[in-house]
Image (tube, rainbow, N blue to C red; front, top):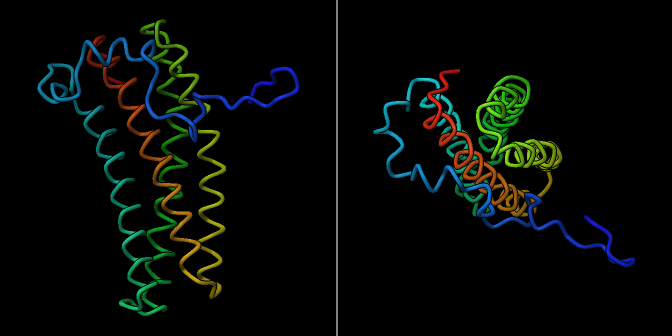
Length: 188
């Protein structure tokens, strides 16, 4: 948050406040529409794998939410839910954390050099990763509470909030990274 005459002004680009990328960061996304990505000559194995990882994160989150809803409505036994929550929740947390480390340490520094117009976009994505670390920690705390016998409802609410942030981040990341790859032919 920025300070303006003693008031805290929310950052409109912060992950929890953002509804879309600003136009200035959509310069390549406009030139390379999402509907055309998979047909592009530079949509290779690296970007296909990366997009599959994003799809996996979304699927794991959907599974965690549907399991929590089933447990809340007593359509799933608490012990079955605990086992699935531990396994799939741990998988999501570990895989997202590792994915962000690889992006921040390997891919983003290389991609920034390919199109300077999007440097601010990559800075935004790195800030998202910092915010996601806190959200991942909060999700883990919520899951651990359920595993210790707490009610599922508050965890389900936390998952819904996490889902909004994760989906915003993944969509924006895709709208920055994929067009850079298509534009430059970056192969990893």
